[in-house]
Each structure stands twice: as structure tokens, then as C-alpha cells.
Amino acid sequence: MTDLAAAGSRPNTPKIAALQATLATEQAASYGYGIVGAHLTGAAFALATADCVIHERARDDLMARITALDATPAPAAAAYRLPVNVASAADAAKLAVDLEVAVLTAYLTLVAVADPSLRVLAATSMQKASVRAARWGAQSRAFPGLAVQG
Image (cartoon, rainbow, N blue to C red; front, top):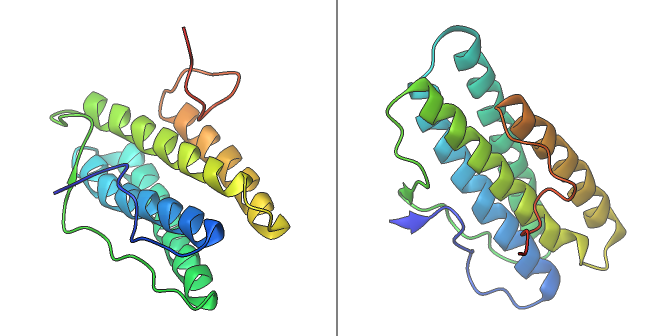
């Protein structure tokens, strides 16, 4: 079983490393939203389903980018250790927040890559993950995705 924050395979460049790490988090988010949706109904279920599709598309895009760099995308884990024990709709919303914060944090690694297109992808993805996290009940933070010290 893999933790949600587990990284992909050992890549050979900083760009591929950042893409693999972000891919691993998108794979985990896709898995996690399956758990989220299983505990919801109605509009909340529809929202979880839509968010799952967003992460699946992001996963597929990252895999294509890695492949275009002549690297092999790391495969998804068979299962993931979730940061929340989900037994209710409230737990599912908490997991959705955790998934989005993890995704937001993962895209920070792409901001440091010299490729301008990856920086744009990272900034856009971080903004969208922040909005999704807020929609699921996350508290607003000045710098989402960055660890708070003190």
C-alpha cells in the first residue's frame, strides 16, 4: 500500500522528477475521489464525480508529458493509505480537502522547473485545486500548499 504523497519512479532530470511526483499525487487523488464519492449522494456525489474526472484528465496529461520526454510514467499504486478514515459524508469532504491540498502542494514542484509551460500549468492547477479545496470546506490560507511554520 502506498501513501498518498508517494513519489513516482527515479527519473533522470529535475523536470521529469517534478512531473513524476505530480503524477503520483494525481493518481492518488483519482483513487481518493473514488472513496469520497462512495460516501456521498446527490449534488455532493456529482461534485465528487466531476472532481475525480478532473484528476483523471490531469493524470493522463502528465503521463503524456512524461512520455513526450522519452521517460516512462510511473504506474499508479494498487491502493493508497488515506489520511482520513472515511465513514461519513463529513469524512468524505475532509478527504476531498486533503486530496486537493496534496495536489496543490505537488504542483509547487513544477513551479521550480525552468520550462515556462510547466510553470503556467502549475500555477493554473494550483489555483483550481485551491478553489476545489475551498468548495469542499478548506479554510483559506495566504499561501496554499506551503507548510506553515511556527
